[in-house]
Length: 547
Image (cartoon, rainbow, N blue to C red; front, side):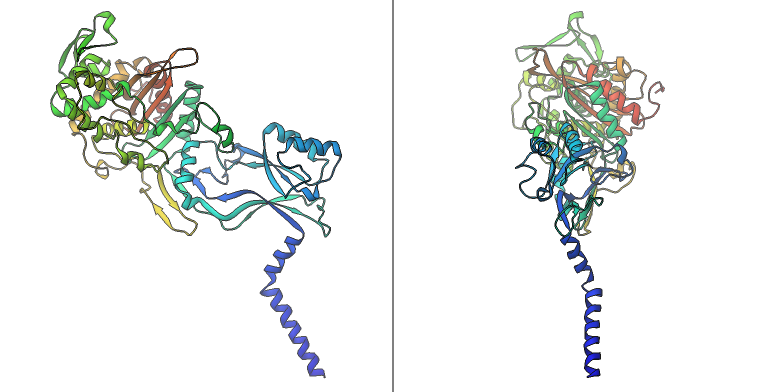
Protein backbone atom coordinates (compact mmCIF):
# COMPACT_ATOMS: atom_id res chain seq x y z
CA UNK A 1 0.00 0.00 0.00
CA UNK A 2 2.79 2.36 0.95
CA UNK A 3 4.61 1.53 -2.27
CA UNK A 4 1.49 2.34 -4.30
CA UNK A 5 1.12 5.72 -2.60
CA UNK A 6 4.79 6.56 -3.23
CA UNK A 7 4.42 5.50 -6.86
CA UNK A 8 1.35 7.71 -7.35
CA UNK A 9 3.15 10.60 -5.67
CA UNK A 10 6.16 10.20 -7.97
CA UNK A 11 3.90 10.04 -11.03
CA UNK A 12 2.10 13.22 -9.96
CA UNK A 13 5.41 14.91 -9.20
CA UNK A 14 6.76 13.93 -12.61
CA UNK A 15 3.64 15.20 -14.32
CA UNK A 16 3.87 18.52 -12.46
CA UNK A 17 7.53 18.83 -13.44
CA UNK A 18 6.65 18.06 -17.06
CA UNK A 19 3.91 20.71 -17.06
CA UNK A 20 6.14 23.31 -15.39
CA UNK A 21 9.31 22.72 -17.39
CA UNK A 22 8.08 21.59 -20.80
CA UNK A 23 4.58 23.02 -21.18
CA UNK A 24 5.04 25.93 -18.78
CA UNK A 25 5.58 28.65 -21.41
CA UNK A 26 2.53 27.47 -23.37
CA UNK A 27 0.31 27.50 -20.28
CA UNK A 28 1.66 30.94 -19.33
CA UNK A 29 0.63 32.27 -22.73
CA UNK A 30 -2.83 30.73 -22.34
CA UNK A 31 -3.20 32.27 -18.90
CA UNK A 32 -2.35 35.72 -20.26
CA UNK A 33 -4.78 35.22 -23.14
CA UNK A 34 -7.58 34.42 -20.69
CA UNK A 35 -7.16 37.75 -18.92
CA UNK A 36 -6.19 40.00 -21.84
CA UNK A 37 -7.54 41.28 -25.14
CA UNK A 38 -5.15 41.99 -28.03
CA UNK A 39 -5.91 44.39 -30.89
CA UNK A 40 -3.62 44.62 -33.91
CA UNK A 41 -2.76 48.24 -34.74
CA UNK A 42 -0.35 47.59 -37.63
CA UNK A 43 1.30 44.84 -39.61
CA UNK A 44 4.98 44.65 -38.75
CA UNK A 45 7.34 45.36 -41.63
CA UNK A 46 11.08 45.52 -41.98
CA UNK A 47 13.21 48.58 -41.57
CA UNK A 48 14.39 50.84 -44.39
CA UNK A 49 17.71 52.51 -43.53
CA UNK A 50 19.76 55.25 -45.13
CA UNK A 51 23.43 54.65 -45.97
CA UNK A 52 24.47 55.32 -42.34
CA UNK A 53 21.79 53.01 -40.89
CA UNK A 54 19.49 55.83 -39.81
CA UNK A 55 15.86 54.72 -40.03
CA UNK A 56 13.81 56.06 -42.93
CA UNK A 57 10.91 53.67 -42.33
CA UNK A 58 10.29 51.37 -39.41
CA UNK A 59 10.96 51.68 -35.69
CA UNK A 60 12.48 55.07 -34.80
CA UNK A 61 16.11 55.18 -33.71
CA UNK A 62 17.75 57.77 -31.47
CA UNK A 63 16.09 60.59 -33.44
CA UNK A 64 12.63 59.54 -32.19
CA UNK A 65 11.96 62.88 -30.50
CA UNK A 66 11.36 64.47 -33.89
CA UNK A 67 9.68 61.43 -35.43
CA UNK A 68 6.20 61.99 -36.93
CA UNK A 69 3.33 60.57 -34.88
CA UNK A 70 0.07 58.99 -35.98
CA UNK A 71 -3.13 59.20 -33.96
CA UNK A 72 -4.89 55.88 -33.24
CA UNK A 73 -7.76 54.96 -30.94
CA UNK A 74 -8.22 51.34 -29.85
CA UNK A 75 -11.86 50.39 -29.21
CA UNK A 76 -12.85 47.42 -27.00
CA UNK A 77 -16.67 47.36 -27.58
CA UNK A 78 -17.50 44.80 -24.88
CA UNK A 79 -15.68 46.89 -22.28
CA UNK A 80 -17.02 50.33 -23.23
CA UNK A 81 -18.93 52.11 -20.49
CA UNK A 82 -19.57 55.75 -19.65
CA UNK A 83 -22.14 58.51 -19.83
CA UNK A 84 -24.50 58.40 -22.80
CA UNK A 85 -23.53 61.88 -23.96
CA UNK A 86 -19.84 60.94 -24.06
CA UNK A 87 -20.53 57.68 -25.88
CA UNK A 88 -22.70 59.46 -28.45
CA UNK A 89 -19.93 61.95 -29.16
CA UNK A 90 -17.40 59.13 -29.52
CA UNK A 91 -19.69 57.46 -32.07
CA UNK A 92 -19.51 60.69 -34.10
CA UNK A 93 -15.73 61.01 -33.86
CA UNK A 94 -14.66 57.39 -34.39
CA UNK A 95 -15.53 55.83 -37.78
CA UNK A 96 -17.21 52.44 -37.64
CA UNK A 97 -20.35 50.74 -36.33
CA UNK A 98 -20.23 52.55 -32.99
CA UNK A 99 -17.99 52.22 -29.99
CA UNK A 100 -20.27 49.66 -28.34
CA UNK A 101 -20.63 47.48 -31.45
CA UNK A 102 -18.41 45.26 -33.55
CA UNK A 103 -15.10 43.63 -32.70
CA UNK A 104 -12.11 45.15 -30.91
CA UNK A 105 -10.34 47.36 -33.43
CA UNK A 106 -7.81 50.14 -33.99
CA UNK A 107 -8.94 53.24 -35.90
CA UNK A 108 -6.76 56.06 -37.27
CA UNK A 109 -7.93 59.59 -36.49
CA UNK A 110 -7.17 63.10 -37.62
CA UNK A 111 -5.21 65.21 -35.10
CA UNK A 112 -8.31 67.28 -34.28
CA UNK A 113 -10.54 64.22 -33.71
CA UNK A 114 -7.81 62.54 -31.67
CA UNK A 115 -7.51 65.52 -29.32
CA UNK A 116 -11.24 65.43 -28.56
CA UNK A 117 -11.32 61.63 -28.18
CA UNK A 118 -8.36 61.80 -25.81
CA UNK A 119 -10.22 64.30 -23.61
CA UNK A 120 -13.43 62.23 -23.52
CA UNK A 121 -11.62 58.90 -22.96
CA UNK A 122 -10.56 59.99 -19.48
CA UNK A 123 -14.15 59.36 -18.32
CA UNK A 124 -14.90 56.31 -20.49
CA UNK A 125 -13.72 52.72 -20.17
CA UNK A 126 -12.77 50.55 -23.14
CA UNK A 127 -11.44 53.43 -25.26
CA UNK A 128 -7.64 53.71 -25.50
CA UNK A 129 -6.24 56.70 -27.45
CA UNK A 130 -2.62 56.22 -28.54
CA UNK A 131 -0.12 58.51 -30.23
CA UNK A 132 2.11 56.02 -32.01
CA UNK A 133 5.31 56.69 -33.93
CA UNK A 134 4.60 56.64 -37.64
CA UNK A 135 6.36 54.00 -39.66
CA UNK A 136 7.76 56.80 -41.81
CA UNK A 137 10.32 59.45 -40.90
CA UNK A 138 8.86 61.96 -43.35
CA UNK A 139 11.99 61.95 -45.54
CA UNK A 140 12.13 60.57 -49.07
CA UNK A 141 8.46 59.52 -49.12
CA UNK A 142 8.44 58.61 -52.82
CA UNK A 143 11.66 56.59 -52.60
CA UNK A 144 10.65 54.74 -49.44
CA UNK A 145 7.17 54.03 -50.78
CA UNK A 146 8.58 52.52 -53.96
CA UNK A 147 11.20 50.51 -52.07
CA UNK A 148 8.40 49.12 -49.86
CA UNK A 149 6.90 47.66 -53.03
CA UNK A 150 9.99 46.49 -54.92
CA UNK A 151 11.67 44.98 -51.84
CA UNK A 152 8.56 43.48 -50.29
CA UNK A 153 10.33 40.10 -50.27
CA UNK A 154 12.66 41.52 -47.61
CA UNK A 155 10.31 43.86 -45.76
CA UNK A 156 7.17 41.73 -45.51
CA UNK A 157 6.76 40.69 -41.88
CA UNK A 158 4.39 37.81 -42.66
CA UNK A 159 2.31 37.17 -39.54
CA UNK A 160 4.31 39.64 -37.45
CA UNK A 161 2.28 42.56 -36.17
CA UNK A 162 2.17 45.37 -33.66
CA UNK A 163 -0.64 45.11 -31.12
CA UNK A 164 -2.17 46.75 -28.05
CA UNK A 165 -2.97 44.47 -25.10
CA UNK A 166 -5.61 45.38 -22.49
CA UNK A 167 -5.53 43.43 -19.21
CA UNK A 168 -8.94 42.23 -17.92
CA UNK A 169 -10.26 40.48 -14.82
CA UNK A 170 -12.18 37.19 -14.65
CA UNK A 171 -15.41 38.97 -15.68
CA UNK A 172 -13.74 40.42 -18.77
CA UNK A 173 -13.62 43.93 -17.33
CA UNK A 174 -10.63 46.23 -17.69
CA UNK A 175 -8.34 46.11 -14.66
CA UNK A 176 -7.91 49.71 -13.47
CA UNK A 177 -4.29 50.81 -13.22
CA UNK A 178 -2.83 48.19 -15.56
CA UNK A 179 -4.06 50.00 -18.68
CA UNK A 180 -3.01 49.06 -22.20
CA UNK A 181 0.48 48.32 -23.44
CA UNK A 182 2.03 47.94 -26.85
CA UNK A 183 3.75 44.75 -27.87
CA UNK A 184 5.26 43.10 -30.92
CA UNK A 185 3.89 39.71 -31.99
CA UNK A 186 5.71 37.34 -34.32
CA UNK A 187 9.17 37.35 -35.83
CA UNK A 188 10.69 40.60 -37.19
CA UNK A 189 11.03 41.05 -40.93
CA UNK A 190 14.16 41.89 -42.91
CA UNK A 191 15.55 45.26 -43.94
CA UNK A 192 16.89 47.32 -46.83
CA UNK A 193 19.76 49.83 -46.78
CA UNK A 194 19.67 52.67 -49.29
CA UNK A 195 22.43 54.89 -50.67
CA UNK A 196 20.45 57.94 -49.53
CA UNK A 197 22.18 60.25 -47.02
CA UNK A 198 19.56 61.63 -44.64
CA UNK A 199 21.22 65.00 -44.08
CA UNK A 200 21.51 65.69 -47.80
CA UNK A 201 17.98 64.40 -48.38
CA UNK A 202 16.63 66.81 -45.76
CA UNK A 203 18.57 69.68 -47.37
CA UNK A 204 17.16 68.80 -50.81
CA UNK A 205 13.58 68.73 -49.53
CA UNK A 206 14.00 71.98 -47.59
CA UNK A 207 15.46 73.69 -50.67
CA UNK A 208 12.54 72.53 -52.81
CA UNK A 209 9.95 73.64 -50.28
CA UNK A 210 11.51 77.03 -49.56
CA UNK A 211 12.61 77.99 -53.08
CA UNK A 212 9.66 76.59 -55.05
CA UNK A 213 6.72 76.42 -52.62
CA UNK A 214 3.63 74.82 -54.09
CA UNK A 215 5.34 73.95 -57.37
CA UNK A 216 5.84 70.52 -58.88
CA UNK A 217 9.40 69.37 -59.40
CA UNK A 218 12.15 66.93 -58.51
CA UNK A 219 15.79 66.72 -57.46
CA UNK A 220 18.28 63.88 -57.88
CA UNK A 221 21.74 63.98 -56.27
CA UNK A 222 24.39 61.38 -57.14
CA UNK A 223 28.00 60.45 -56.50
CA UNK A 224 29.53 60.65 -60.01
CA UNK A 225 32.12 57.96 -59.25
CA UNK A 226 29.92 55.23 -57.76
CA UNK A 227 26.57 56.19 -59.26
CA UNK A 228 25.01 56.01 -55.80
CA UNK A 229 21.83 58.08 -55.48
CA UNK A 230 22.49 60.22 -52.40
CA UNK A 231 19.15 62.03 -52.47
CA UNK A 232 15.94 61.91 -54.49
CA UNK A 233 12.91 64.10 -53.87
CA UNK A 234 9.68 64.84 -55.71
CA UNK A 235 7.14 67.57 -55.17
CA UNK A 236 4.33 67.67 -54.32
CA UNK A 237 4.89 64.99 -51.72
CA UNK A 238 2.39 62.87 -49.78
CA UNK A 239 1.82 61.42 -46.34
CA UNK A 240 2.27 57.62 -46.39
CA UNK A 241 0.00 57.40 -43.33
CA UNK A 242 -2.85 59.06 -45.26
CA UNK A 243 -2.80 57.53 -48.73
CA UNK A 244 -6.53 57.97 -49.30
CA UNK A 245 -6.41 61.77 -49.41
CA UNK A 246 -3.37 61.70 -51.71
CA UNK A 247 -5.25 59.61 -54.27
CA UNK A 248 -7.92 62.28 -54.68
CA UNK A 249 -5.65 65.31 -55.07
CA UNK A 250 -5.48 66.87 -58.54
CA UNK A 251 -1.73 67.55 -58.43
CA UNK A 252 -0.91 63.81 -58.29
CA UNK A 253 1.41 63.92 -55.25
CA UNK A 254 2.14 60.19 -55.40
CA UNK A 255 3.93 60.46 -58.76
CA UNK A 256 7.70 60.35 -58.39
CA UNK A 257 8.68 63.09 -60.82
CA UNK A 258 12.37 62.20 -60.49
CA UNK A 259 11.75 59.22 -62.78
CA UNK A 260 9.24 60.82 -65.18
CA UNK A 261 10.30 62.31 -68.55
CA UNK A 262 10.25 66.04 -69.31
CA UNK A 263 11.37 68.29 -72.16
CA UNK A 264 14.96 69.20 -71.21
CA UNK A 265 15.29 72.49 -73.06
CA UNK A 266 18.87 73.74 -73.25
CA UNK A 267 20.11 70.99 -70.92
CA UNK A 268 20.16 68.86 -74.08
CA UNK A 269 22.86 71.16 -75.45
CA UNK A 270 25.27 69.11 -73.32
CA UNK A 271 24.54 66.15 -75.62
CA UNK A 272 24.98 68.30 -78.74
CA UNK A 273 28.26 69.64 -77.38
CA UNK A 274 29.51 66.14 -76.51
CA UNK A 275 28.70 64.87 -80.01
CA UNK A 276 30.20 67.92 -81.75
CA UNK A 277 33.45 67.86 -79.76
CA UNK A 278 33.81 64.07 -80.08
CA UNK A 279 33.31 63.99 -83.86
CA UNK A 280 35.31 67.11 -84.62
CA UNK A 281 32.29 68.97 -85.97
CA UNK A 282 33.14 71.71 -83.47
CA UNK A 283 35.96 72.65 -81.13
CA UNK A 284 35.62 74.91 -78.09
CA UNK A 285 37.19 77.72 -80.16
CA UNK A 286 35.05 77.26 -83.28
CA UNK A 287 33.42 80.58 -84.14
CA UNK A 288 29.84 81.03 -85.30
CA UNK A 289 28.21 84.34 -86.21
CA UNK A 290 24.88 84.68 -84.44
CA UNK A 291 22.54 87.25 -85.97
CA UNK A 292 19.73 86.42 -83.58
CA UNK A 293 17.89 83.88 -85.74
CA UNK A 294 18.46 80.96 -88.11
CA UNK A 295 16.39 79.30 -90.83
CA UNK A 296 15.80 75.54 -90.69
CA UNK A 297 13.36 73.65 -92.88
CA UNK A 298 11.36 76.75 -93.71
CA UNK A 299 11.06 77.78 -90.06
CA UNK A 300 12.80 80.60 -88.24
CA UNK A 301 14.37 79.79 -84.88
CA UNK A 302 15.43 82.64 -82.62
CA UNK A 303 18.11 83.14 -80.01
CA UNK A 304 17.27 84.90 -76.75
CA UNK A 305 19.73 87.63 -77.84
CA UNK A 306 17.73 88.39 -80.98
CA UNK A 307 16.45 91.78 -79.79
CA UNK A 308 19.99 93.10 -79.59
CA UNK A 309 20.99 91.59 -82.92
CA UNK A 310 22.31 88.29 -81.61
CA UNK A 311 25.61 87.42 -79.96
CA UNK A 312 27.64 88.23 -83.06
CA UNK A 313 30.83 86.19 -83.44
CA UNK A 314 30.78 83.65 -80.62
CA UNK A 315 32.94 80.62 -79.88
CA UNK A 316 31.36 77.23 -79.32
CA UNK A 317 32.48 77.37 -75.69
CA UNK A 318 30.79 80.72 -75.15
CA UNK A 319 27.74 79.51 -77.07
CA UNK A 320 27.21 76.86 -74.36
CA UNK A 321 28.03 79.30 -71.57
CA UNK A 322 25.48 81.84 -72.85
CA UNK A 323 23.09 79.21 -74.28
CA UNK A 324 23.11 80.53 -77.85
CA UNK A 325 20.35 78.68 -79.70
CA UNK A 326 21.47 79.43 -83.25
CA UNK A 327 25.01 78.18 -82.67
CA UNK A 328 23.71 74.85 -81.40
CA UNK A 329 21.20 74.53 -84.23
CA UNK A 330 24.12 75.05 -86.61
CA UNK A 331 26.07 72.34 -84.75
CA UNK A 332 23.12 69.94 -85.00
CA UNK A 333 22.86 70.59 -88.76
CA UNK A 334 26.55 69.79 -89.19
CA UNK A 335 26.28 66.63 -87.11
CA UNK A 336 23.09 65.15 -88.53
CA UNK A 337 20.69 63.06 -86.50
CA UNK A 338 22.60 59.82 -85.96
CA UNK A 339 25.58 61.10 -83.91
CA UNK A 340 23.24 63.13 -81.71
CA UNK A 341 21.00 60.14 -81.03
CA UNK A 342 23.98 57.84 -80.44
CA UNK A 343 25.57 60.16 -77.90
CA UNK A 344 22.22 60.83 -76.25
CA UNK A 345 21.68 57.12 -75.64
CA UNK A 346 25.29 56.59 -74.56
CA UNK A 347 24.84 59.33 -71.96
CA UNK A 348 21.78 57.51 -70.55
CA UNK A 349 18.79 59.22 -72.18
CA UNK A 350 16.04 56.74 -72.98
CA UNK A 351 18.15 53.90 -71.57
CA UNK A 352 15.89 51.33 -69.85
CA UNK A 353 18.86 50.15 -67.77
CA UNK A 354 18.97 53.54 -66.04
CA UNK A 355 15.33 53.26 -65.01
CA UNK A 356 15.56 49.62 -63.94
CA UNK A 357 18.80 50.08 -61.99
CA UNK A 358 17.13 52.03 -59.18
CA UNK A 359 14.39 49.39 -58.73
CA UNK A 360 11.54 51.89 -58.40
CA UNK A 361 8.15 50.69 -59.70
CA UNK A 362 6.76 53.02 -62.31
CA UNK A 363 10.15 54.40 -63.36
CA UNK A 364 9.98 55.64 -66.93
CA UNK A 365 12.67 56.38 -69.49
CA UNK A 366 13.30 59.49 -71.50
CA UNK A 367 12.46 59.74 -75.18
CA UNK A 368 14.70 60.01 -78.23
CA UNK A 369 13.64 59.52 -81.86
CA UNK A 370 14.24 56.04 -83.23
CA UNK A 371 17.43 55.67 -85.24
CA UNK A 372 15.40 54.91 -88.38
CA UNK A 373 13.30 58.06 -88.01
CA UNK A 374 14.08 60.58 -90.72
CA UNK A 375 14.65 63.98 -89.19
CA UNK A 376 14.48 67.11 -91.32
CA UNK A 377 16.26 70.42 -90.64
CA UNK A 378 13.41 71.74 -88.47
CA UNK A 379 13.42 68.50 -86.47
CA UNK A 380 17.16 68.82 -85.88
CA UNK A 381 16.65 72.41 -84.74
CA UNK A 382 14.01 71.36 -82.20
CA UNK A 383 16.25 68.50 -81.08
CA UNK A 384 19.13 70.91 -80.51
CA UNK A 385 16.87 73.07 -78.33
CA UNK A 386 15.53 70.12 -76.31
CA UNK A 387 11.96 70.63 -77.48
CA UNK A 388 9.24 68.32 -78.84
CA UNK A 389 11.40 65.37 -79.97
CA UNK A 390 13.38 64.63 -76.82
CA UNK A 391 12.52 64.09 -73.17
CA UNK A 392 14.61 63.03 -70.22
CA UNK A 393 13.97 62.19 -66.59
CA UNK A 394 15.77 64.08 -63.81
CA UNK A 395 17.49 60.78 -62.99
CA UNK A 396 18.75 60.51 -66.58
CA UNK A 397 19.88 64.14 -66.49
CA UNK A 398 21.94 63.36 -63.38
CA UNK A 399 23.42 60.24 -65.01
CA UNK A 400 24.37 62.30 -68.10
CA UNK A 401 26.17 64.86 -65.94
CA UNK A 402 27.91 62.09 -63.96
CA UNK A 403 29.59 60.98 -67.20
CA UNK A 404 30.92 64.49 -67.77
CA UNK A 405 31.97 64.91 -64.13
CA UNK A 406 33.83 61.59 -63.79
CA UNK A 407 35.89 62.00 -66.94
CA UNK A 408 33.72 60.24 -69.49
CA UNK A 409 32.88 56.85 -67.97
CA UNK A 410 29.43 55.27 -68.12
CA UNK A 411 27.62 55.55 -64.80
CA UNK A 412 24.90 53.24 -63.53
CA UNK A 413 22.65 54.65 -60.77
CA UNK A 414 22.41 52.62 -57.57
CA UNK A 415 19.79 53.29 -54.93
CA UNK A 416 19.74 50.11 -52.80
CA UNK A 417 23.09 49.13 -51.31
CA UNK A 418 21.95 45.90 -49.66
CA UNK A 419 18.89 44.08 -48.42
CA UNK A 420 18.23 41.19 -46.06
CA UNK A 421 15.13 38.99 -45.97
CA UNK A 422 13.42 37.59 -42.86
CA UNK A 423 15.27 34.32 -43.44
CA UNK A 424 18.64 36.06 -43.19
CA UNK A 425 19.29 35.86 -46.93
CA UNK A 426 21.39 38.92 -47.70
CA UNK A 427 21.74 40.57 -51.09
CA UNK A 428 24.48 43.15 -51.56
CA UNK A 429 24.03 45.35 -54.60
CA UNK A 430 27.00 47.71 -54.28
CA UNK A 431 30.20 47.72 -52.22
CA UNK A 432 29.80 50.05 -49.24
CA UNK A 433 32.76 52.23 -50.17
CA UNK A 434 33.32 55.94 -50.68
CA UNK A 435 34.13 57.32 -54.12
CA UNK A 436 35.78 54.73 -56.34
CA UNK A 437 38.37 55.40 -59.05
CA UNK A 438 37.12 55.72 -62.63
CA UNK A 439 38.28 52.17 -63.39
CA UNK A 440 35.43 50.87 -61.23
CA UNK A 441 32.85 52.48 -63.51
CA UNK A 442 31.46 51.19 -66.79
CA UNK A 443 32.73 51.56 -70.35
CA UNK A 444 34.12 54.83 -71.62
CA UNK A 445 31.42 57.00 -73.17
CA UNK A 446 33.37 60.20 -73.80
CA UNK A 447 37.05 60.71 -74.44
CA UNK A 448 38.81 62.18 -71.43
CA UNK A 449 39.72 65.34 -73.35
CA UNK A 450 36.10 65.86 -74.41
CA UNK A 451 34.87 65.44 -70.83
CA UNK A 452 37.52 67.89 -69.62
CA UNK A 453 36.50 70.46 -72.25
CA UNK A 454 32.85 70.09 -71.28
CA UNK A 455 33.66 70.56 -67.59
CA UNK A 456 35.45 73.82 -68.39
CA UNK A 457 32.59 75.03 -70.56
CA UNK A 458 30.00 74.14 -67.91
CA UNK A 459 32.03 75.91 -65.23
CA UNK A 460 31.69 79.05 -67.34
CA UNK A 461 27.89 78.79 -67.20
CA UNK A 462 28.08 79.33 -63.43
CA UNK A 463 30.90 81.88 -63.37
CA UNK A 464 29.97 84.16 -66.28
CA UNK A 465 27.03 82.64 -68.14
CA UNK A 466 23.31 82.11 -67.76
CA UNK A 467 23.54 81.10 -64.07
CA UNK A 468 26.21 83.58 -62.95
CA UNK A 469 23.74 85.89 -61.19
CA UNK A 470 22.86 83.04 -58.82
CA UNK A 471 25.95 80.82 -58.75
CA UNK A 472 28.77 83.29 -59.41
CA UNK A 473 31.56 82.78 -56.88
CA UNK A 474 30.71 79.13 -56.26
CA UNK A 475 33.00 76.27 -57.24
CA UNK A 476 30.32 74.64 -59.37
CA UNK A 477 29.51 73.85 -63.00
CA UNK A 478 26.34 73.00 -64.88
CA UNK A 479 23.75 73.90 -67.47
CA UNK A 480 20.48 75.80 -67.30
CA UNK A 481 17.44 74.78 -69.31
CA UNK A 482 13.98 76.24 -69.91
CA UNK A 483 11.54 74.24 -72.03
CA UNK A 484 8.09 75.25 -73.19
CA UNK A 485 5.32 72.84 -72.22
CA UNK A 486 2.22 74.37 -73.78
CA UNK A 487 0.55 74.30 -70.35
CA UNK A 488 -0.67 77.22 -68.25
CA UNK A 489 -1.55 77.59 -64.59
CA UNK A 490 -4.88 78.71 -63.19
CA UNK A 491 -4.14 82.36 -63.96
CA UNK A 492 -3.12 81.67 -67.56
CA UNK A 493 0.62 82.02 -66.91
CA UNK A 494 2.76 79.64 -69.02
CA UNK A 495 4.37 76.72 -67.19
CA UNK A 496 7.95 75.86 -68.16
CA UNK A 497 10.20 72.94 -67.39
CA UNK A 498 12.96 74.84 -65.59
CA UNK A 499 16.24 72.93 -65.18
CA UNK A 500 19.67 73.15 -63.69
CA UNK A 501 21.94 70.13 -63.90
CA UNK A 502 25.50 70.36 -62.63
CA UNK A 503 28.27 69.19 -60.34
CA UNK A 504 30.66 70.40 -57.65
CA UNK A 505 33.51 71.04 -57.08
CA UNK A 506 34.69 71.73 -60.63
CA UNK A 507 38.17 70.14 -60.57
CA UNK A 508 37.37 67.14 -58.36
CA UNK A 509 33.60 66.57 -58.62
CA UNK A 510 32.02 64.81 -55.64
CA UNK A 511 28.36 65.59 -56.24
CA UNK A 512 26.05 65.77 -59.25
CA UNK A 513 22.64 67.41 -58.83
CA UNK A 514 19.73 67.60 -61.29
CA UNK A 515 16.93 70.04 -60.46
CA UNK A 516 13.62 70.29 -62.33
CA UNK A 517 10.86 72.77 -61.47
CA UNK A 518 7.50 73.07 -63.25
CA UNK A 519 6.80 76.77 -62.94
CA UNK A 520 6.56 80.20 -64.57
CA UNK A 521 10.28 81.07 -64.40
CA UNK A 522 13.46 80.06 -66.21
CA UNK A 523 15.94 77.44 -65.06
CA UNK A 524 18.36 80.18 -64.01
CA UNK A 525 15.71 81.86 -61.85
CA UNK A 526 14.02 78.85 -60.22
CA UNK A 527 16.21 75.72 -60.50
CA UNK A 528 19.72 77.19 -60.13
CA UNK A 529 19.07 78.63 -56.62
CA UNK A 530 17.98 75.18 -55.41
CA UNK A 531 21.14 73.67 -56.92
CA UNK A 532 23.18 76.33 -55.13
CA UNK A 533 21.59 75.62 -51.75
CA UNK A 534 22.28 71.90 -52.08
CA UNK A 535 25.91 72.38 -53.10
CA UNK A 536 26.40 74.92 -50.31
CA UNK A 537 25.35 72.24 -47.83
CA UNK A 538 27.14 69.28 -49.41
CA UNK A 539 30.39 70.90 -50.51
CA UNK A 540 31.26 73.02 -47.49
CA UNK A 541 32.77 76.42 -48.18
CA UNK A 542 31.90 76.34 -51.88
CA UNK A 543 30.80 79.95 -52.08
CA UNK A 544 33.61 82.44 -52.45
CA UNK A 545 36.28 79.85 -53.24
CA UNK A 546 38.51 80.61 -56.17
CA UNK A 547 38.50 78.12 -58.99
